[in-house]
Amino acid sequence: MYTYGFFGPSYLLIIIGLVISLWASWYVNHNFKKYDEVPSHHGTSGADAARFILDNAGLQNVQIQRVSGKLTDNYNPTNKTLNLSESTYDSTSVAAIGVAAHECGHAIQDQTSYAPMRLRSALVPAVNLGSNFSIPIILLGVILGANQTLIQIGIWLFALVVLFQVVTLPVEFNASGRAVKILSSSTLVDSDEVPMVKQVLFAAALTYVAAVISTALQLLRLILIFGDNRN
Image 1 (cartoon, rainbow, N blue to C red):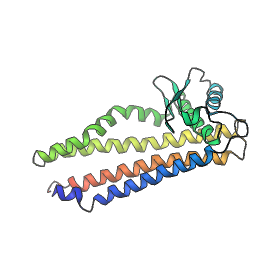
Image 2 (image 1 turned 120 degrees about the vertical axis):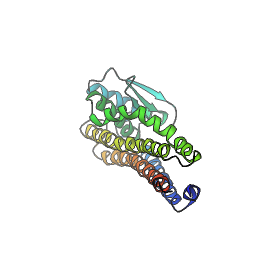
Image 3 (image 1 turned 120 degrees about the horizontal axis):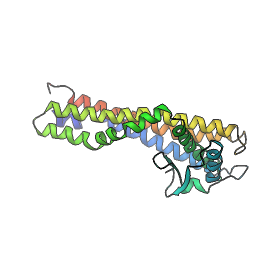
Image 4 (image 1 turned 90 degrees about the horizontal axis):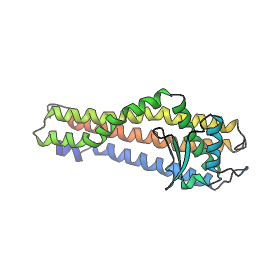
């Protein structure tokens, strides 16, 4: 019966999640490409914009580094580094400045001990456990004759992944909000460029929303397949 569940009607949930994730990925890349072709009026690079924002926030200790890839930008609270991708670091586009400002928003969250960010960091060890072992534990439970204890443990571990992604949402939206507010009151971009920044950051935020929906659908599928002890 479990085998039927894997390939039965519940498999539609996986397909829906995949479609949502692919659309979100296309949407963020489409918007970044669109506004990456729009040079900022002041010609400020992503790296220079980040340095300006960090210094004004009293974060001179945060180092800015170039990393390979496209849209691989991130802030590392462990070593206090702002990592800007090749598509952001030297670019003077509106998109690059928006992405750099967003990552600065994370650095400021770290500086102010923003509660959701602290919670997300605290969840990392448990989430790593859940993402790596939830499915193997469920499958082990099936192999051992539908061992409901192992199956339920696996489902709860997978639920931690969903929880982590839910907690990530306010962290990302708040960082984007900080970025827009900073850029709106600075000389890094003009007022007519702010809506473009908002569009880029909104598209990026949708990828996190899509991740929550996709993973939640996978969790629902696991519950539908394995959640009934009578099965």
